[in-house]
Amino acid sequence: MGRQVKPKAYDIMAPTCPSRVILNRIGARWTIFVVVALADRPMRFSELKTRIRGITSKALTETLRAMARDGLIQRTEHGGQPPAVEYALTALGRSLLVPLAAVRQWAENHVTEVLDANMRADESDFIVDVFGDDVVRP
Image 1 (spheres, rainbow, N blue to C red):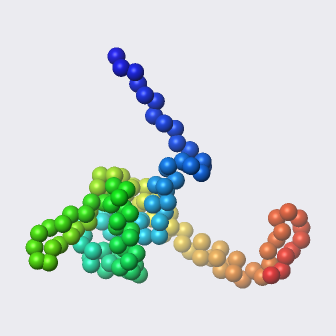
Image 2: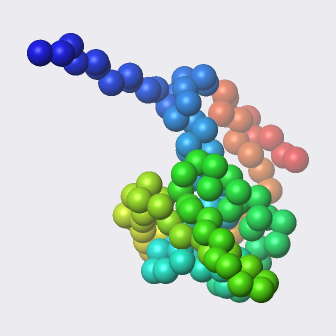
Image 3: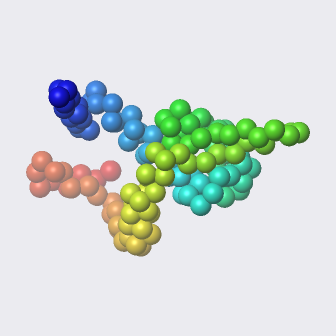
């Protein structure tokens, strides 16, 4: 019988942990939107740009390249004139759908509470000093 290798333990809180790179990718501004857009079917660049309103061509290009590098999406070139390129989630990218659906649901369920908290904070013209009882006025 062969010796079993223990899987390496990763610690997301350690500054040198490689899992931080993954969280940075998932937490990047447009990644979640690309994953959600590609959940049902592969799409061409122009379809993604239309579906993800507000994203620039540059931002979409950078996001797609980074996600392909990380193995989250696959870029497939189809022949023809002009050549067509489609983007699709890989199995690894698809594995993000369930956790991202939970985050999306949480955001949609709590958007009003967060916006209310923002409004209350913006209306407040003072900051409480956390080290004492002093009120600091900006």
